[in-house]
Each structure stands twice: as C-alpha cells, then as structure tokens.
Image (cartoon, rainbow, N blue to C red; front, side):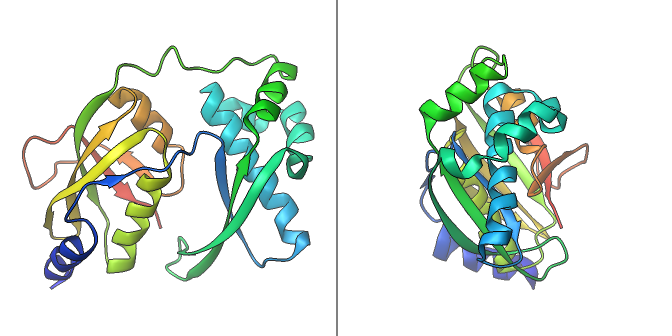
Length: 209
C-alpha cells in the first residue's frame, strides 16, 4: 500500500527533474516558536552549518571561537523564513531557514583561520541513490525539499518506488564522496551500508527520524 502511495506521489510531484536551489550560505534549525528568544539560538545553529559546509570540517562546530562568531549570526544574515516540517519523532516541527551574506561569512572564516574547501569536492557527476525509511507522502516530500535546498544537487529525479524506499538519480555539482560526506552530517539523511532491493545503486541512505 505504501509503495502505491509513493508511486502516486512520484507522478504528482516528481515526474520531471527537480532543479536544486542554491544553498551554500543557507542553514536551518528547528525552533519551538517564531519568537525572538528561539530565533537567536537557531540562527547560530544555522550559521554553524554554513561554516562547517564551506570549510569541510565538522570539528568547527565544537570550537569556542566559532561559537562566539555564530552568537552574532543575526548580523551576518540576509534573510530568514520558517518552514513546516516533520521532526525526528514524526510530529510537526517548525524549522527556521536562514541565508547569510557570503562576504560576511568569508570574513568570519578568515578570522577563524579556515579556508573554503572547494578543492576536495571532486568532479561533478551523476549518481543513483536508494533512499529508505519512507513511511508516508510527507516523508517523501521532506526528502525532495532537502535535496532541493542543496547547492550540491543540480537536478534530482525519482526513478522507482519499492517498499519503504525510492530509487533516485541525482546530478551533482561535486563528486559523490563529497556529497555523501556532506549529507551524512545532516539530520535528514544518513549513509548506511545496506543491500537495496534494486541493482545499479551507487549509495544507500536512510531518512532520519
């Protein structure tokens, strides 16, 4: 039954390739409300995501000097908005999505003594991904929104739905290893060592909860 629902959703939502939005300087974080008290800490989390992504170094998230910079995230922000999503517990969740000024972010990275890790991104490529753990139409929509927010993904198209998973073809602006290392740090998708029910898959991922 789930597979039929997914197939219907694929026809309605992704019968054509979906271009991705630019997101190098965009980060997001869950919030309890749209109040200022919740927005400040969420902006810090979102900016930390941006710094980690651009630097290619997850250890930045634990540095005290990074925390001091991201405490002023509101001053580096260009715009923000809120999005309704589904949390890890399956309940509705409010997510803040913020875009930061590229020049300001570059200056912050400079003060931190960190360079932008573009050299190790690899050549653009196409890949076939199996994404499992999809239990509802909202789960599928969540995946599409996430892929559409990544500047690493130029286009994505759904090829097949089976059981609780989908087979997708993605056109990447980077190499597959860099893409996988980046998405594996998110709360949305996790790279797993599994045997998908279809052949010709380059990587297997599972939707986070």
